[in-house]
Image (cartoon, rainbow, N blue to C red; front, side, top):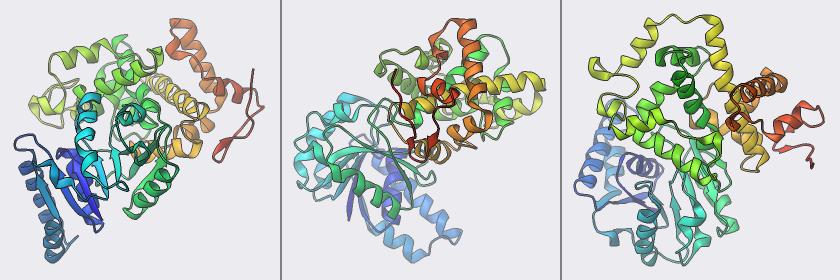
Length: 398
């Protein structure tokens, strides 16, 4: 199988690595000066390290490198069975690239996008074979993170989902099917993890380090500020803004002025040396700052409750809107962003009444629709419905 990867940045390089390690021939296309050289050097370094650790043999390393090609010539993608695009999150840039690539492909080739937040329908609008197109969203770093969101669009053929699910399983990934809605599963459900933490900080409830420490105390590997600094505010803020605008400026997804100012100032986080934390003293600055704080246990509990209840509400909304099944929502959040528990499971354990009560108190206090409870949460609190495996056991109408 020949796999062509459009874009030889960190994500594209990782996707190609997965493919070649599963027996595929891989060609990278990137016209940006120096991109292919950096990608090749990165792959060689990774394979050398794997060989040194005994994860692969020297023969396997050479064999895999022999099945990889890097090119600045777009014709190199010709003959590919599967094309995965992983370039900048810009609708026009992606559509222009697809217009150049599709004529080089056979009519039975699959064309996929790794977009994290753009519309699959919009991206497919200029294609000759939109039925062969859909989302295949990997998570960074792609070789290590197990989750892949498989996202068919309104013009995508029925066999796309089944084919991609089977292929991802062959590649050792965990595929979950998501509806073509802004942010799909993970980037929709995860928004409150960042936005509510920032709001708590803006209100002066606690410091950046205190909020991160509180969140990590319940099993999260990284706090929201630590994580956004790692992702980069240029990336994280842009995704937030995209999801917000595509959901018609729903207050639940409203971006933060604080994060916008960091982006405008070029303070993207670890990669620029400063974000919410200052990394002049080292890349462990966030962890050091968290270890130095002493937060009141009751305050920590309230911080966690507020953030967690909004995440649970968003997860239920994903189920209510038919974006994904309850088990796929939980699978996506545990396998895609390493949540210690799925938010649906967390909601069951906390009790739907506690989640609803917290949201109602915040909604009454702030008068802000970001806290409005999902209709499914309200319905679950009536005791007339339960979340079963794969579906809501009792649909409802008003």
